[in-house]
Amino acid sequence: MSDTTEKQLLHLVIGGELESLNGVEFKDLSKVDLVGVFPSYKAACDAWKAKAQATVDQAQTRYFVVHLHRLLDPDHPVQG
View 1 (spheres, helix red, strand yellow):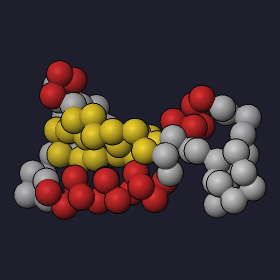
View 2 (spheres, rainbow, N blue to C red):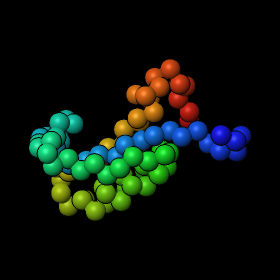
View 3 (tube, rainbow, N blue to C red):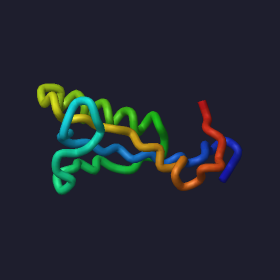
């Protein structure tokens, strides 16, 4: 990896209908939308925003960005 290439920081975007607006438990795990894995937080946020806007009329549906790089390498320092 060259000095100009940014380190790949994997992020997962998932979403679906929640049991309650007060929690993060999905109503039906078989219907969870696995949007994809992205190489940066910005790319993941772009995907999250598109899905969130497309489901704005579905009050119980939420999308999340999961920081996979933190799970895969918990000792790596968090970058701003």
